[in-house]
Amino acid sequence: MTHMYTYLIQLPRRIRTYCTIRANMHDAGQATTEYALVLLGAAIIALLVVAWATNGGGAGRIGELFDNVIGNILGRADAVQP
Image 1 (tube, rainbow, N blue to C red):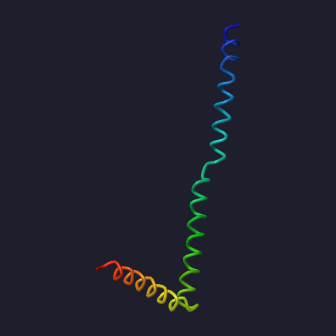
Image 2 (cartoon, rainbow, N blue to C red; image 1 turned 135 degrees about the vertical axis):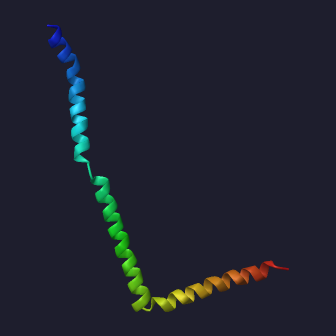
Image 3 (spheres, one colour; image 1 turned 90 degrees about the horizontal axis):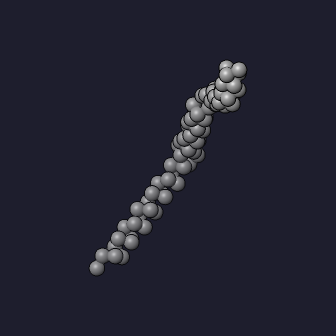
């Protein structure tokens, strides 16, 4: 009788442990897959930006943007100095 009582007392813990193990096995490798997909997406975006900058006339636009930013910074620096 005591063995049956002990078994019934430990049964919920065993079921919870079993369910936890099964749940963890289901998610195994999911983080690796998500990481790989994020890297793939970043690589595709980087390739698109490089293609735009080299073939799509983006190089001239980037140069103009850089010149405008540097000119703006230098203009503000000259305005601040007495």
